[in-house]
Image (tube, rainbow, N blue to C red; front, side, top):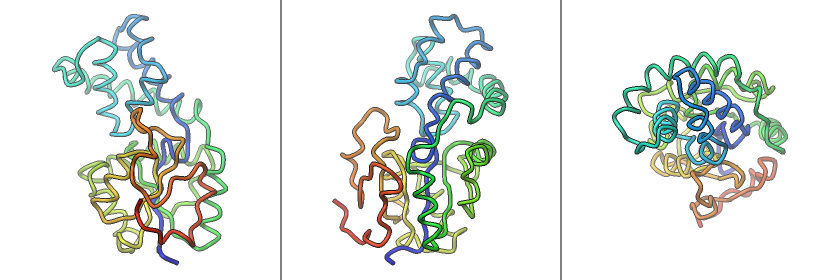
Length: 234
């Protein structure tokens, strides 16, 4: 086997969580006194192009978008701490209620486990929310390790989370496959020295994921052919 373990992303790779994000963000904006028109701006297309770099980034960009401000506007930045308090409360209550496991994800994880592949889940979602979602969707037992965006000093696309996850798995990065859905995952994997496979159905900030170099681009996780992944990066 070319690899000793696999690191799997969560949002957009295992579970379609856009519905969760939209509902939680709407509640958060309402708590902050936003008008219905402002709240309506935070729709599925906006969220799909915005998620992936952690909750703080999502909140800042959401507030700016709702208020018609630039992404890095000081008013939006200043409002993030208060928004985060409301966001946490709503997400804890609603996590998983408006999301679905992608077709083939459960089967793909089972196939890897049956082949003896150690698995870790690595996401920019806070660890507590990741654990809660994996439990709710019946996926937690597949993973020996789960790390969220608050587990390490930096988040993907920084390579540190992948390097630390490899250390926790006891495997070298070059022998640890990263499976994700976005350029964030690919960028982090390349910088950490991990090979990467990308699913074609997730969230990649509105850009075609097939344009991002990877060992393979797969339409379902159960299409991952573990034994044939010693292919050159294309």
